[in-house]
Image (cartoon, rainbow, N blue to C red):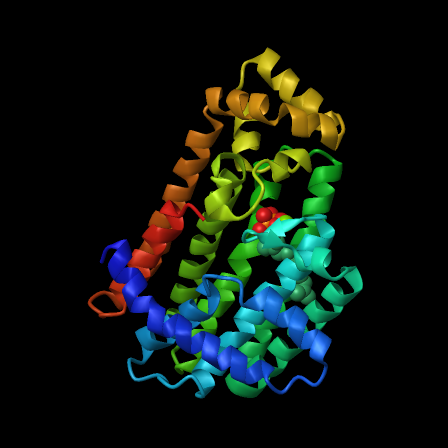
Amino acid sequence: MNQLELIARLKPETAKIDAAMRQDLASIGSPRLKEVLEYAIFNGGKRIRPLLLILAARLCVPQAGDDPGSGLYRLALAYEYIHAASLLHDDVIDHAVSRRGRATANRVWDNTHVILAGDFLHSRAMWLAGSLGGVDCLAALSRATAGMVEAEFLQLANAEEMSRSRERYFAALTGKTGLLIAAACESGAIFAGAGDELRRALAAFGNNLGLTFQIVDDLLDYLGDEGKTGKAVGNDFQEAKLTLPLLLALETAPEPDRDRLLQWLAAGPEERGAAFHEARELIDRAGGFTAARRQAEALTKEALEALAPFAGRPELSILQALTAYVLKREK
Ligand code: FPP
Ligand code: MG
């Protein structure tokens, strides 16, 4: 299945997820809260987490719910809500000014509105997971959310200590993105009543796909086209975040280049902002981008291998195409 076929296959599903979300948010009493949430949620997001939950459920049980009012779609919303809540909070933490080509909600309103809106989505998501997916789905989603918060703390410690440990980078990555996507896939299997083996296979697929997604995100932060990604390029370097391309470059760069990179990391954000293009050139010369892409490719391979128990199932080709898209995406 090529990318165009994938988009054609997923479009009706995305529309149904959006319809379910509009229906769910219609009951909110506070007009301002509704305004902030609509701004944060209906912004051209890819809906990857709810889509994966639905596809995972269908991989286990082909006839799993088809109607946006069904439990399956409503359960899937929980994953979009936690994702949206984490981005609302993340943009406050990162002092971000743009996301998906628009001003961040913290710029349109302020931190108070954004933090509260994120809290609302957080609790709504837990309620949906518990009431529609039962205790196992609630446990999967809460574990992933707690893991995301821990990963934020680990990321802070990594930045503070200028950690150059790949292990700690991957631990933060797993917590930030792998856990939630893994839990979305596993929750699809739980909803479909699948056994432990299939639950574990889908969780492993989701985790590896999530790691790929985040490494590509880290690459796009250096190499992306702002017109496509909707985010400013160079943010990670300016914030002194040691993401994979930079970590790998620090391992392989010749000493003078490495020292230069380290000097910028020890300097202030303004100096780093001004040095971004030069730093990118040094990382490229040290092979940091190529090596990071190779890691993403290896993780994609592991993701696809985890789907072996589903060989021959028609939904499999959609997940395979989605995996290829995550690796090749430019936005
Ligand atoms: C984006 O990272 C951030 C995340 C994927 C997760 C952030 C998680 C939290 C703030 C915890 C949320 C907690 C609750 C309870 C909802 P990034 O800054 O590297 O990516 P970006 O470039 O998209 O901003
Ligand atoms: Mg951020």
